[in-house]
Length: 498
Ligand SMILES: [Zn+2]
Image (cartoon, rainbow, N blue to C red; front, side):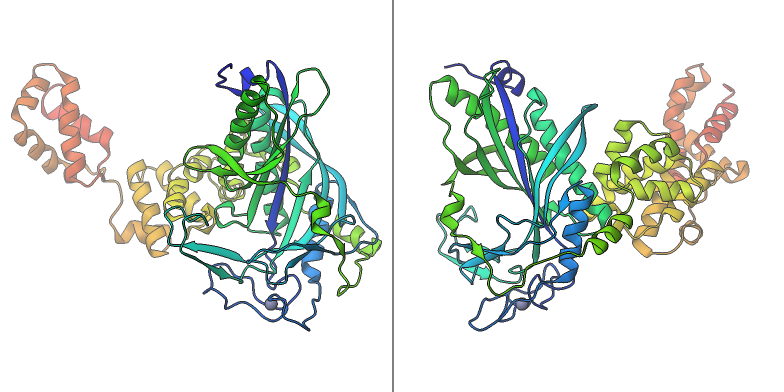
């Protein structure tokens, strides 16, 4: 048996075919078929009613805002919108689904047959979209008492139905062949682009870590040049962009090892393990017929008025690809820089900071650097930081005119984040101005020289480089507020070495 290490080696003998099923929780105020609120993080089982618990006699009513969001997603993905379609019951038992069926769509999805163009390492890949349909989310099960949080080894399980009935859009791609060794990157690029698109449409908060965007990753291998597609596996609920890429890579290598040794890939769902980057078998895959789908008898069919669909099409926001082309020009950014900004969710913030007067490179550095770190450590999106693009632009301005050094500018930004005050107030209250007054610095320079006489001697003897230690001492004594260049000049002058 050959040992394979990389997708590149796998693709010497196999063509990978990938496919992605993405579930997106819409951010409507109420649930899909009842009036319960949808806010994340509420006490368990406080956002429930007879409808989303499926109690006898309760009747669902479809949420118009969710239907509108789904149609807008379909239009943004270049899909056809059905003139008439129905919801369907998907029958199965699971404790997090109190009705014993899920209201979904089966053979009559709302949107079909579209595409999304993505950039994979500079190469354009068109990902076909099979369908975009609307369904309800299930509740959440918490397995208690085991070490892994999984059902195996748990003492008991708790169910929270707050999530049951939240509108969920499922976006299914067509199989994507032909990406070769780029298959893992292509899967990631697709989810990244889709997330950006959904964010721009304003239909979901697309937080993978909170589960409002979840991905199932399908992978199969076809013997190179055969045109015969292999058996696929479906890795469920992969919940970060990096994990999407890793899951594809792992499955490509695993399946190649199975096929190389004369084995058969089993059609099954698999679990992804964040810690190891590996997948393990879940249940064997059900066929659609196992679910005994039938049209939902408690809901009227959907028949979107073509005039309404046309008006939604007209009111579409600028989509990511067009917007990127326009911003690349305006912000003078390379495709790579734009992709970094998109990944960090800061494109708008950088653009607004530029609008407020900052040079593009400075605006980008702040939002991708110091501010991205702050957002990351606080576990929030950069857009939710308590600082505005105008405030960032003001900090940039104060650095440019010499009032703040880079270090002081960071302190000023941290002050704004901590207090919510404006930049000038923080600079004044914390005394952050750079000191470039010769008289004010003279005493600190003398002290530094007196404290390190051997260093001073070296500088006097012509070792100018040694002055760095003295400059450092003065900067420390002035809490970083001194103008370092000026301090250096003063020291060298005082020691007769300047
Ligand atoms: Zn409810």
